Amino acid sequence: MNSLTLIQPDDWHVHVRTGAVLNTVIAHTARQFARAIIMPNLKPPVTTVAMALDYREEILQALPKGSDFQPLMTLYLTNQTTVEEVKKAAESEHVYAFKLYPAGATTNSDAGVSDLTALYSVLEAMQKYDLPLLIHGEVTDANCDIFDRERVFIERTLTAIVKQFPDLRIVLEHVTTEEAVQFVESASNKIAATITPQHLLYNRNAILAGGIRPHYYCLPILKREKHRLALVKAATSGNPKFFLGTDSAPHLTHTKENACGCAGCYSAYAAIELYAQAFEQANALEHLEGFASFYGADFYKLPRNTKTIILEKRDWTVPASYDEITPLKANEILNWKIKQ
Ligand code: DOR
Ligand code: ZN
Image (cartoon, rainbow, N blue to C red; front, side, top):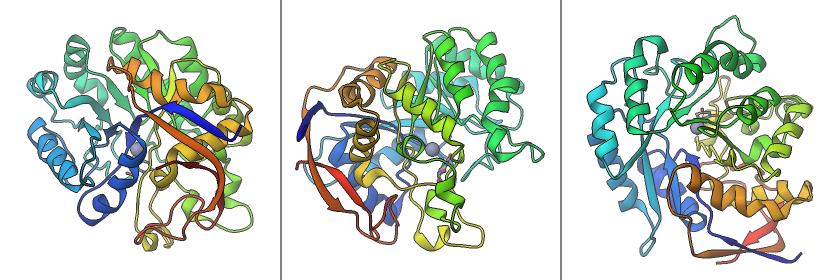
């Protein structure tokens, strides 16, 4: 197959930041995707509808001229989030979900939730207004091995939430384990998951074998090969519970190549090409369009896109950096390219 036409995809999980970084990365996302769910973990976090509307304006201003890309905003759940704010979010035409970061789980999660049971009235309101809850599913218990944190979160926390709020729509973001795949598969159709390109393409050897490679370090961390295989199977199965969410998370190169490097892989520059590579390796290119362009829109109850994009089978070398951001697969060859 030398070219592939797809309905334009959407990115259901992306970090675009603010300021200079936003200016660099938003053009990459907008070139490929019609819409994207924008993560709210800024400093300070986007906790109110008013802040989300300001952030949305900043994103629109940073878009290349003529772009019709639509940022879909989210609010950052904290211990102080009120039922009133949930109602405001539900009434806003620009806010699409709440994001739960367990406090301390990842980049800019200090303001995250420390005791979810104290927020049950807020989750109740989200269920009532049918606003999805997007979850970074890792425990923050210092005694829990970093490779087990997703599985333990499902056992200790997620199972209880799903039971308590059976009608709450939940996206378990960036799933990384066989256990997460099984959990989502066996849950009701209110529960879905996003999968990143790095978790489809790599296992934990990419970070650690033959030297420490910080550009493969993200959270949840890459796992063993058996988990990668379970993710590939889920993504390429045609099961609408699994859809595209890059978790593209730009950090300046010096903050990753550091004694205490930041978590996050920058994939937005070629997200759909990276997914095409993963699907091709699994001999499943025919399932790419559902995963990338249909199932997320269906879950969010938004219309599917109608424009198309064309991917061509053509080798190209990924630059060493985009401004000061080192991309995933820097200096390597990708074999799909979106046609402009
Ligand atoms: O690797 C990650 N980077 N995981 C996250 O959950 C957050 C993200 C970021 O914001 O850099
Ligand atoms: Zn993320």
